[in-house]
Image (cartoon, rainbow, N blue to C red):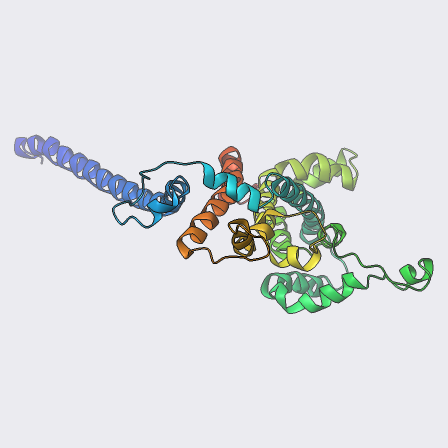
Length: 331
């Protein structure tokens, strides 16, 4: 039988429990906020440092009293980097190449990923093992084969047949990029196929069956039902492809010769060799540029390279986070 004392102590116990719950939530919120602030600071701090460095005159680089904010502000450094990297021509060429590669990769990998998820065909496990091999094996192991193949391009002897017995050299053009991307052999294509295959496998087959009952064809079902539901994952693959191609040096150096239009990543990678001639009064007699000055101009180039990617993620981060969080529809 409950006494008056028990009835009186019950509100006290409830209030203590509520207070403890609120305290735990407050502590967790504070810890989470500190962790997020630390992670954000680790990402933003290098960008702020490079931005402050970009506004400094050369004499500020060797002043030990200057940490982040310059004492003598100048925008001349940006003009120098623009000249050394052929900006904006190199940036527009990079944008065009990255968009072409990304679109072709997304189209081909989406079709292949859907095929692996929904259809049975001979040697399916073997071909999917080849997809995994694209993820595991670094592309540097086949660099010699790629160089030889596109330097002496020929398919089943057809090129020699219609070109007087001679092969075609495709290096120095964007065609190697297009061919590899359209055939799912481009940079990180194995990862995109795997991501899309896993997503399509999580979509209930009842959606397709209902569409077939209503008279939809296979392609119509894919384009009108499956693809719209997979757009967050498709967009994530596009972002990954665009970013990796934007900063790629391996394929750019392998496929695009010096006669091709300048690409910003290659221009930035060779900026030091052009500094010595740029700052020399006589172009035939290059000078040695101080290391601090070299690092400053390289930092500005890296900052310029990152700005378009940051803007891209600002406008697409909601869809990108959604694609990472979701695991497909459920029955």
